[in-house]
Each structure stands twice: as C-alpha cells, then as structure tokens.
Amino acid sequence: MLSVSSIAHVAIRVKDIGPTLDFYVGKLGMREMMRLDRDGRLWLLYLRITDTQFLEVFPEGEGDRAAAREAVGYNHMCLEVADIDIAVRELADAGVPLIRDKQLGADGNWQAWIEDPDGHRIELMQMMPDSLQAGALARMAAAR
Image 1 (cartoon, rainbow, N blue to C red):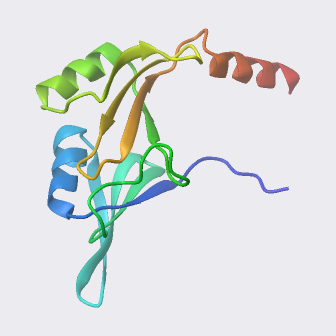
Image 2 (image 1 turned 120 degrees about the horizontal axis):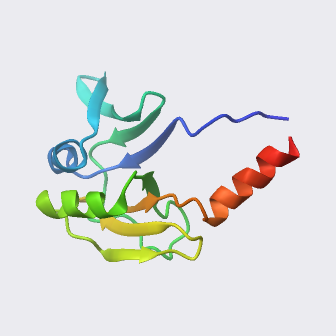
Image 3 (image 1 turned 45 degrees about the vertical axis):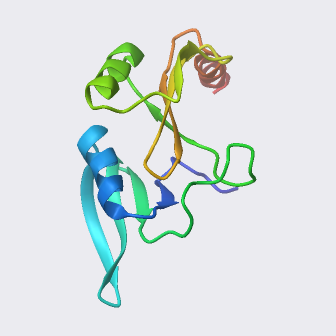
C-alpha cells in the first residue's frame, strides 16, 4: 500500500504572474523559492508554504477566472493559520477582502475565505482542539 506522508505542492495556473506574486508574496507573506524556465520563458515558480509544502504557479493561463465553485475540478486550497482573528486583521491591513466572513465551520474550525487575483478560492482555517479533525486524530492515535 502507498504510504503518503504529506501534500508536497498544489499547482495553479494564473493569467499574469505580477498580480499573483503581489498577492501571494506581498500580501500573504509566502516566499518565492525557485523558478524554472522553458524555451527562454518562465515556465513555473515555487512559493514556500512550509519547508516541504509549496504552491506551484504556472503563468500564462487562459481565461479570466478559475472555475466556478460548483465545477468539477480544483475547488479551493486551505491554509492553516494559528489565529483566525489575527489573520483576518492582517488581510484587511493588506487590502485583501474576504469573500466569506469568519465563521465556525461545520467541522468545528474557524474559517474565513479569500480569492487570489485569478479567482482561486482560499480557505483560511484555525484548527480548534474540539474540531472533528482533532477528534479523528485523537482516535487514530489511540488506535495505534
């Protein structure tokens, strides 16, 4: 059986790399890790989420926005934050509007939602000790 240890990267295609870098680096604080060129042009770049998790960005996408929430395919990316209130405040200070205000999700975690310049939906989540995920992790640990 395959033993997966983590998500290494999520890949997105964007229309224009400039606004994308302003958003992810300038407003969300990710760091550019590396770029790969192909045929003398930027092919993709990696943005750091953690030392082993990255956002892989391909420029020159076609169309104006990411697929609708109901479409088959990529739906959203979730970034965990330590404190949702601080994250929401930092986003407001950076001029990033929420597309869905802070709320307690059905799983028991606090969440708020934003979009990048291409319409990719991003959930910000504060994992709570009494959430469904925390309970599931405790049960899995006890079963070992």
